Length: 202
Ligand code: GAR
Image (tube, rainbow, N blue to C red; front, side, top):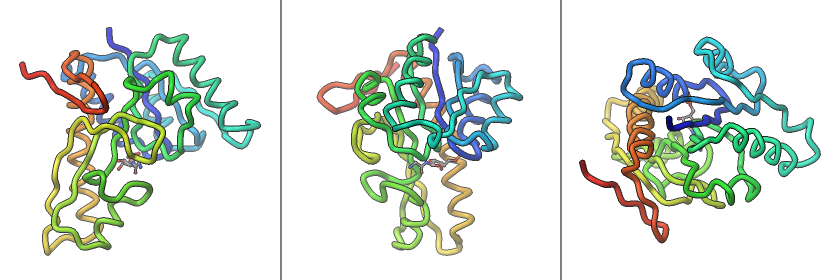
């Protein structure tokens, strides 16, 4: 079956959404591996509970980014990973991973890209006072949240919202959009050509 590896750094609610979608029979993939750069992160317990293998590492224990990325790529290749899913992985990736996995690596970002790339995107949108924000899933390229967009969903900012209620609304949309998008890819419905994405209708 279609084998995915999820990269996450913290809470892992998006990782959990994938685990739950698989368990519910809504997503026909195997979650082969969790890659985590923070051995204390809550997402690791989520993986252990679900019986999913974990590759946890401390970046400081390596001589360079290239050194740990080379080790990760070896692990991904060994396991025959079809798709890498970045789900709250808060670290820039270099060409060591991006080049071999271009077109096979996606990221979820909590804004309507190209607005508000980088960290704290929900706060950035909130501070700016936008009336509509949302969620984007895109292929990963060498830039910061800059790769070809696969799916997006808008989230309205209501006058009664606070940053906290907006965050809750964004996360709820993320937890739908990420399993949905992984499902499209695993079903072979997503085509990337000349940096544009085409989704086949059923
Ligand atoms: C999610 O909102 C994700 O979109 C965001 O981090 C959060 C992780 O939450 N990612 C980025 O900001 C990437 N630039 P989670 O650990 O509960 O899934």
